[in-house]
Length: 383
Image 1 (tube, helix red, strand yellow):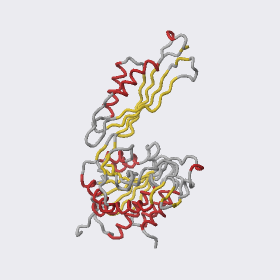
Image 2 (cartoon, rainbow, N blue to C red; image 1 turned 135 degrees about the vertical axis):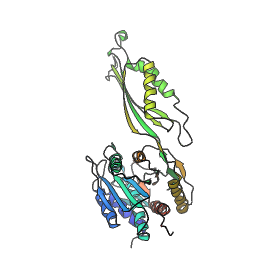
Image 3 (cartoon, rainbow, N blue to C red; image 1 turned 90 degrees about the vertical axis):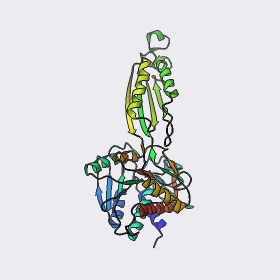
Image 4 (spheres, rainbow, N blue to C red; image 1 turned 30 degrees about the vertical axis):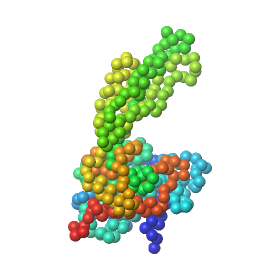
């Protein structure tokens, strides 16, 4: 019989073989559904739009522990630049290569292997184990986890704990666990001017010139000081476009894209109001459109954090850093249910990169940490 780590690699490899570029699941959830059903899970398919979602449960009652993840991946880029074909899982020198190996098909395999071992030892465990899996995390995230969370709310299903398998680790699996995330607010600013010839500036109005002071003020603003869990809010301009491409034309409009990553010291509405007030003070003729990727969230309940931390200590012999850094994740949607969330997954050094890979031995350790966390949170009454 294959070792537990070999079983994890086999399942991860089957998933990597499916070219599930977001939002296409490409059959991954059918594979996972079959494995979970064999473990005794009741599996429900929850398609919304073109997105595949999966909800699977084992057991009954509280506490309800949810493993959350995604089967979709980002595009692989030029396959000729990869050492191995991106959708051909390849083991080389102790590492598993392929798109999604670290983000996050490896995590899904580690989670499911962990639940399989736990259920073998605890077939009549207390509480409920569930999986929430989507194929719309890397893309628009419109018909994925956010829609499943709405469905859970309508069913009056309130998870007590959630483990998200995002690649949180930095150097070694478990050295960083995420206990929250900053909010992300995107702005599209259009400053209107009057197009004209550069030789006759008195007959035109240059929106680039008019916007410079306001943009510099936004860059220089100290939004807050952060707090013990979050760094200060940051403002970053990501794109500026204006003009026709000709050097002798004053543009009629300037477009600026920017993003704020914000802490629990702020709200999206408060940031929007501050920026609009700053632009109004400078008398700009503008339009400002907002897109909120997610509000910040922070797990304050120690039960889940302690269970994961103790499991990392047990398996890896290290003290994990508790972090709220990184980008956004689907944890932001699950947090709306009031659920404590911890994100734990492989080392993130190669995610979204050419030659994405994960260390096979550490994938086994990750699964052991998941199992140890299950044992701590769903401890049988006589244990």
